[in-house]
Length: 311
Length: 279
Image 1 (cartoon, chains in turn green, brown):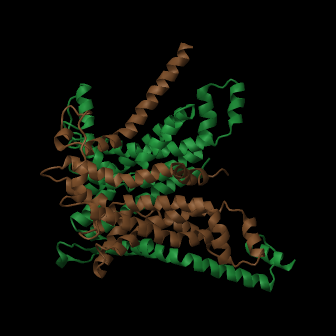
Image 2: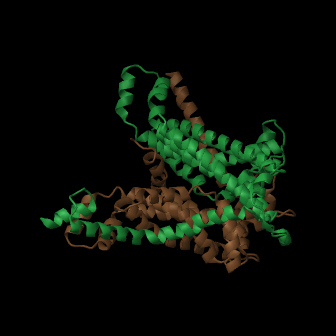
Image 3: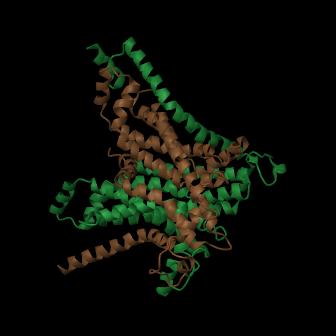
């Protein structure tokens, strides 16, 4: 059957290459190119071109408020950046925010997944409720927390704090409390994500290993340490990678809750780049900050991916 | 026996606390949207009050109505979803199924584009769109939304296309169907579920986007997530109205989220479980 040989040459296996087969392979390439072209043109236009343009812009002094001072400055923006205290503090805030929110999400999410896994009834409730924060807009989440949850006097958090004898606090006005608040908000919104992923992953683990471990009289802690954790490792690492990428470039929730304040207490690098470009209208320097954020993102994701591969 | 019962009780208590912690801010906003301003500001917080729909009436039909903003949000989200899917489905199919040189690089490129921080994209985009007069337009916003929706959609769809058995394609091909026809009539119906999940995600992400919207929106095109700020100013906050707007902004995504609940979890885990690699 000639046609079946042709088909397998085109679709999958490495059948011997006839001239006819080569023509078909070429046709397949063209078909692939036609299918990919629109998406890749759009990606080039919306991601790669801006990236190149961004790097180019970062070599300029481009101040929309004072256009007469604009011009090519080479690496000057980067030199300024290295001695810019606000840059270093925003980098530190970024790292604290990302590190703590990701750690909290994974630990709470995993603990909760293990807990719910053992529940015979009521799992459904968790699944439905867990979906809610995840689908909400971070801007709306930020707004709800800023007003109805964290507002002084009548906000629920303040109400609880007063009744717990802690006294009223200025949750968003105090630098330390503001940082804790934005971390709690991010953790509140995204822990359900870690929870859902880890719960699904837990459910896919083979039951018989646990049976065997139980027969060997392994304690619950041993089973967790020796079986669950190693088997869940790929899922955990993947959650860490995905959440780290998002936390590093978090914007809406912090912007709506504290706008980076008080002062620069909650100003992550991302927010600093935004403020510099669109509030202070210093676009050249803002671009340099955005490039710095990209470099930080690449370094961190490089480390995380290396961890994923390492045994 | 008592130890076990104690454990069960503790478990129940912990889970109840967590369910409440997650649901509470949302429930509380809904309750506040049904109050008057003075009821919102009452101390201690009021759980019992006479509910009113005044806040909804005011934000929808009063002066400064957010109805146009809801329409903006819908146009942006639907537009982004349609354009994204038209481009992502063929691309994902090619990446999952066809053989061509540079395929690995193409796949890597799609993944890499997701790493770009949005703030880096918006700076050059703002400059370009300002020059061509596309600030405060639907096409300007939808175009830039492709930067995050397209890589995500392609990446998610590839995982669904890879699940379709090769034999189906081969059989259709043997029957003399062209490649395009095979894709349209045989493959796409097979991944209908995956396409639906992707549509939901793309819509959600477009509805929730904020940074690009803040920079690019103006008086004509302003999604509800940005317009919400009108209700909070230094001088005064319109508490009940703000709650009503929040609830309206939440409504479409919460409904979608709950309806598509199972699929969303699957969509979320595709990357984490598959990408984590069983190898």
